[in-house]
Image (spheres, helix red, strand yellow):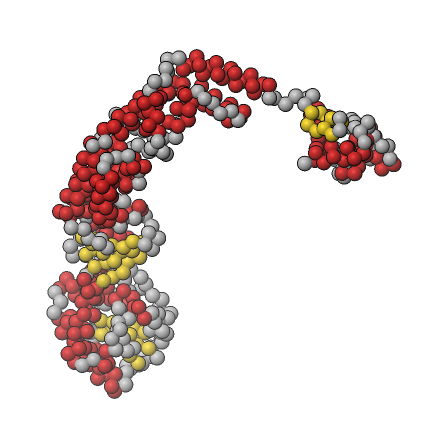
Length: 476
């Protein structure tokens, strides 16, 4: 639905299109009272001057935007014949349509703030100049769909110098962030160098940290909100979910980040922060040596992992603390992350190391003395011993699970009672179950045919008070 179809035209105001707001009337015979018509004449004159100043392409785009044969400027009217005190912004019509059955919505964000009837001739001319400029800009935007502009913004974002740098340097950026949180910093030399490096990290990483994860290093997939910035001929593109926005310059086909980094300085800084860390790591070759020893130990442990896992599982089940050096070594090393490639005193290499506790570095020398050639035989012997212990600790039918004053309840008897209570459809109260175990053939027990059950009289020789205790034990 074009703007022209919504509005009304009057010969006296040939460059103005009157569009209803709030409510739409079937017809408008005349427009404005005497004072309003005087203002309209001034508007008509200013609009005519501004439209004449446009080039042919701009007038053509504006006429297509309005949907009329020539370029015009919409003037809002309400209460059938009165002009609305503020002009309507072109965003009211951009990439949208309005119903012919009602007037334009009175959304104050879509109207200019200035009350044009109160402006001097010079102020009104200046206001109209800005309004026409805004309409020309939106008319240009209307040449493409909203989705096409979003695609253009996304392409410009990906071409931004900082985004291209960040994408190229992503491994280093991630490595810096990882090392800044790494426990390894506690053992590298020297503390004052580490403190200075971490201080520099906060400065160097600031522009990278301003970019949300979903925007690295292309625009996120969430729905966007576009705000037209007429003054700068730009579009503000915002993601409400990521709470991040960029500004797109339509004429330059470029985007601006919320905080624009100085590129020459940014390029140097990311290279410097990597070099500074490498210099620190190069002073800590003892740490590098210990990490390489752990790498070697990790490789030697690999053939024994299935056996080690079986041993550790059994030890945990049996609650046994083992003194075997190889199992202690494996338990500690499987909690860390070390790359397969040889570790070097460099940022990218050390960022792949993740230690739960740097104390493990002190154990590397001791674990290097483990005879891994004999490990399989030793582990198999130890596993056999654990399996024997497990067999010994397996529950047996004759195990006494409850005893009081010489009266013993075996596991087999308890399981017999448990099986019966699970299989019967009867609801057995605590009292009835005690009577059944005692072997008392009461009328109720006979009625329920419990005197024929396999547990009837199971504890016949027990005193009543002990049967009560045994039943409590079995039911808890």
